[in-house]
Length: 255
Ligand SMILES: [Zn+2]
Image (cartoon, rainbow, N blue to C red; front, top):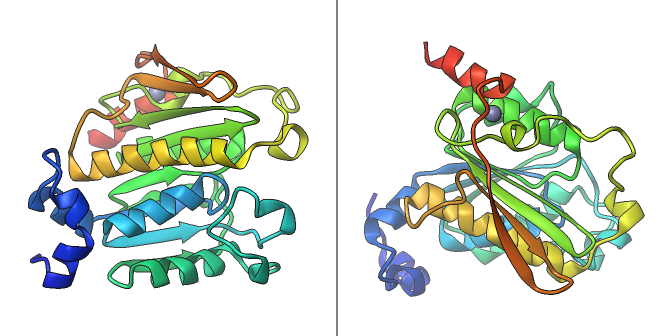
């Protein structure tokens, strides 16, 4: 894959970086990345991946745009109310970068659909907002050996973890037991500030670009916790658990 003159100019500010290279850019161009959820986290993730030149970005979401989404989900506009989020986002993202193949998929991500969605992907970015989905996506990525960037945001806090199945701790290694139903308030109940979703989602986008381009040191075995209230960030070490059922599927799949 050779970059055209327009692509060289479009991506010039990242190509000129000491850490970046034509090889890194080509790795992006050849990648197929699944963005699961086009809401609060999916907004910065999809925008920066498409802007950076990931070759094929698949957007997966079953929801429509609602008025209460717009303060943080800035990939959508007031005129998009009632429109499927994947269609609204795809239109905006194609306008941002027509070089990228943006594929909208209006589908609910759950334990039934996750394995088919992650199969064949270069990388999955989980921008969902439910624990059930997060564990389903983690387990599907482990079984398929597909790298994954997990994140969550609520109120003024958030976390990010990158996962290379079989090589680093997975989400289930870090959080072996899902919280009991109702123990963690939803976004609807606890709320979230727009910039907090932007900060956490931007970290998630950065991790995705690093993993695909093979640049820098991703958050493998390191859980990033971000506290917006006092602007602090903490790295917590996590490690693979020998009894993790999701990681056991990596080993089984490799045999
Ligand atoms: Zn695990």
